[in-house]
Image (cartoon, rainbow, N blue to C red; front, side, top):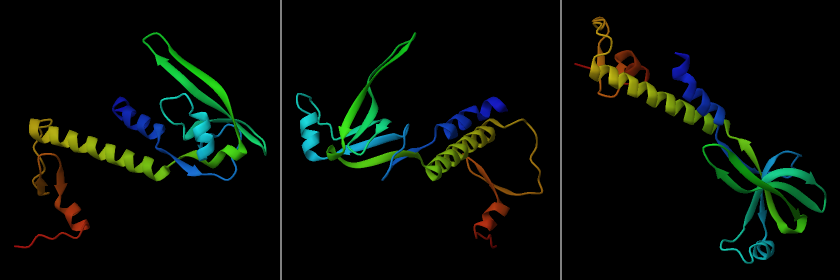
Length: 165
């Protein structure tokens, strides 16, 4: 049973992150520095794509500048995972807005519940189609059977549905 729940636990642990505006960032925070137009044009010279923002981890913060540890390149193979990182120093005058990467609890919970519900629906659907474990269902509780899942009549009453003859 523990192995079946592992993907769900890993999904919840991975979490859903979002960037939110931050007035003051601390050392070690993952941030996105949105550059103003002049800085974006200057830093994008001789590149194919414009650089409008810089993502990285805060190494140093002074009133005049912000130093970020930035991922420059990544190579992945069967034997090793290589990451090339560099320190990028942005002057405060170049930064339009700073966003901090934070865990979105509601999104993570919503995704976890949706994946768990989908997994339960698939298992229930397969059990209905294949026949489950060959046990006879309890005849005392009538159920509405849909190919994907089974909903008891008591559950329908919770949502305000009533069956009338």
